[in-house]
Image (cartoon, rainbow, N blue to C red):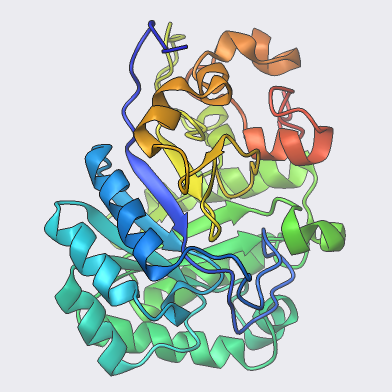
Length: 339
């Protein structure tokens, strides 16, 4: 069944190119560690890249695992960049070298997202492992010196939820002269499901979003501050106040983006791991246009509970991954919504 209402463009693909990782972070949305036995081969990855290019994708974001551990990431970056895609990657920042950054930049990598889950070694290392704070700081400095655009990404947990700690994150980002700071919601899935004590309450999440908006204005021109939390529109007066008849923003899972796992499964996003197909046997563009799950996500009249009744559903939509992981129904009300 083809979506006859509107053909939504696939803007971004998040590609988890390997499950392999040198860390065991408590907030990991997968169980990254050892490479999976049936990960896509090099030849299969090149075919996937062709499918991504043919689907008209604008942005390719490498994830994992630790993407920098994949032996062909430079080749994939070059191929995607030469095809006109904007290429960026996540990294835990602990294995960054000057030589690697130079090669990535020459291949066309435009931006790197470094994970820091606390403004001090004590807080960060409790989540990400002993010694990681020092290593990621070093990695960021190397990347900045080589002219790479850097975003610092912090997953906010019960350990870092207070205003003083958040303020120190802003200070650290300014000190490191990163281009942007992204503060993200902890969603207890993957390894994170075993560490639910790190999750925020809906009221704590609301306070964090207020802090983000306040500092976004305060530091405008000095530091770009963002969050992927769709609930930000409930507090940010810059968002349109009148309801839209079609989706205008919010959760992009299956609407503007999708995820490809290390074994080729296609899902709406890294925290909404419902398989719609596999690139080993399915055409990516065809999945994007015809998947029943994607089509349901593109019509927010399908949402349930408060989200369905909310006049801002087409600029928000709630986090479908949180609904799936905490309420076992991706169409249910986002459990973190306070209204």
